Amino acid sequence: MRVTTINVNGIRAAMRKGMAEWLVESNPDVLLMQEVRAPEELVEKLLPGDWNVIQEGSRIKGRAGVAVAVRPHLDVTAARIGLPDDTDVDSGRWVEADVTVGQTTVTFISAYLHSGTATDPEKMAAKYRHLDMVTARLGEIDGEKLMAGDFNIVRGPRDIKNFKPNHNKTSGVLDEEMAYLEDWFSRYADVHRHLVGDVQGPYTWWSQRGKAFDNDAGWRIDYQMATPRFAERAHEAHVGRASDYASRWSDHAPLTIDYDIAGF
Image 1 (cartoon, helix red, strand yellow):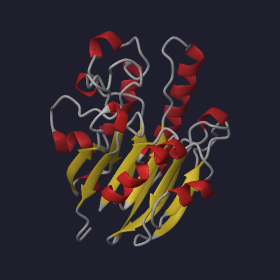
Image 2 (cartoon, one colour):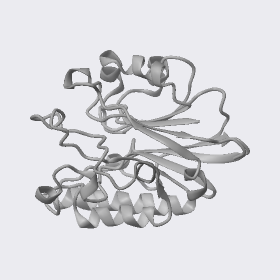
Image 3 (spheres, one colour):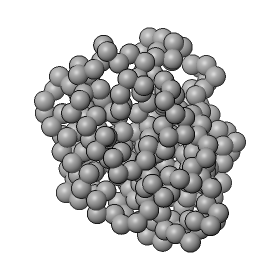
Image 4 (cartoon, one colour):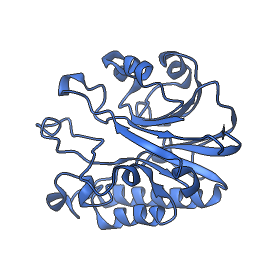
């Protein structure tokens, strides 16, 4: 079973730049997308092939938007949109789909967490409020689950090229933010890190400015976080980094992980 998460940075632009061809070649069974920024009926039309799409759009036009797209050979038994008590700035950031995987139901979550701004206390307060809602919701979902998406936070020095200049100065590299991830990963597996081991990166996002992509000055902020039993089924991870800057169809690269679901 192939699961891919990708911040598409606007699905209409991504499709024009080559996402459709990548999707046909990669052929995931479950596709979790963030920053979709398009109506649900359009998303389903843009995706090549047959998909069951569950989406939450943002109430702020042109912002956020998340989706879970599932191939028709997998049975989606239920879906839930959004987080309880969200505000406009929190909308378009959370969608759940219960999918039958083997003999088990797995809840797939596409999440787009706030980026925040370290110099703006109001934006950071909104980010921490959102992270608290995520923590609470994770505790409410029973059974096997996989939360994937753009978390907008690194775990530590292995996850960002320039850790020291950004540590406790830039949003996404603040100790208070990273503490949320460590709390979550005390109960769930960081599947990508588990598979690649104690190495630098692999990064999944590069700034559009300067030579960040060319110099591989990236951040690992896209994750697949799973319950331990499901994570044990993971056997291969791949970051679809473009061959060069001109070939990119998003500022993120897709993170794909293959799971062996035989007998699950």
